[in-house]
Length: 319
Image (cartoon, rainbow, N blue to C red; front, side):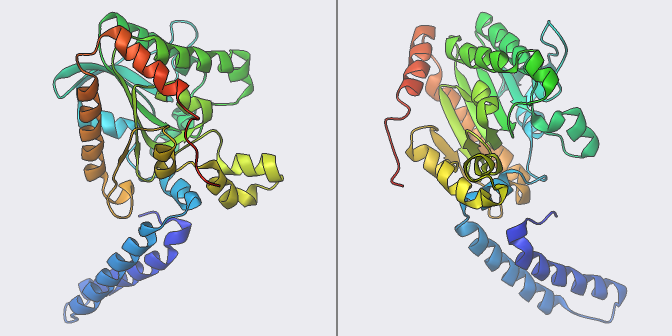
């Protein structure tokens, strides 16, 4: 288990409990069951207390936790007959973006998402979930195909942001993001999105401009990372805690602002401590959102989506 900075007290208690059990395993005459169980109870209470009132910055840390389920995990668990479709038909295939045809509850769909990877090798291959222009152009191609074949589109968002490298900029990163956002608004099929980890900047908006948007309880969605915001506003990345609060990037704040439509509950301790329960909850949310849109005409879906984004900014939060 990878422990976050604010989970250090929990790490100590769980570490002591594991030490006791290790001693008991090496010495069969030693019975430390009661002591270990007492520490387990103490750890459980502390875990609940820690996650009861997470700050915005702590939620950022949880959203970035390496053990959270990623897009590939959701596709493997929730979709059947997944057939990956590669390349943008122009430059290359971007491994930061996964996408293809699949069945969701036996319904044919197009599923697209950003994949961060789960170890050093896969993270480098996936560019840590930061898509290049060819990734967004691949998404446009797949959305276009879904529109032609009348397939609902399911988007899974998990990215720190679009890749800002020199090559990406030379190949038209901003234009590719804009085209992807435009395509989201133009297709006449149901489009639902779930922010499963980080929803960073335009790189996330290009996937999440949907009829219905859901967020996991401890995921985040913002125009910039707290560190980036602090560097620009205060010339000090260490002020990321203040920036996180000011950005209103939590699921609770974004639902109040009308940016997202629903919050998906996570197990106590976050998705990383209950991977299967989280995946099941995301599956139920996708099913419910698609059900709301089933049977609507293409014109109605496009109008619904357009109106949703025109209405943004009408609601506010007290500072």
